[in-house]
Image 1: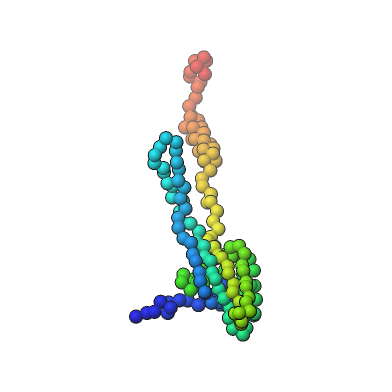
Image 2: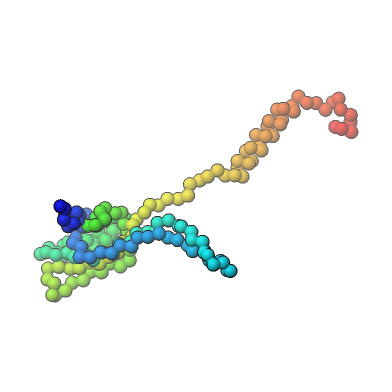
Length: 165
């Protein structure tokens, strides 16, 4: 039988290891409730999965915790997304969200605590270009004019009465 602790992964951010004392994560869905006057039922619109957020209470311990702390701070100060290896959730591409707290205590020698929050990085995507309706209409009209010219090129008006021409 597997003990749950055997499934934990060693925590790190951008390759800098740390220990996790506690963590918290938020998950869910984004919805918009539409309420209307004189109606007893609302309409709830599903807007998709909410952004995942993680709060981590970490600590660094040992004779070299000063160096480990400085490496973790440098990793946190690096701009852009980085890889967080979360003990319970595995590898996640995240960005630091807000302030990072580092604390030292005389009662807890040879260690420091680091508290930080991250938000999943997601991906940057822009809307894709579609068909420009006005451009399509203009090119179709031009093609129609060309076709009409070809069809009626041999049609002459010479035999018609003057008032019809």
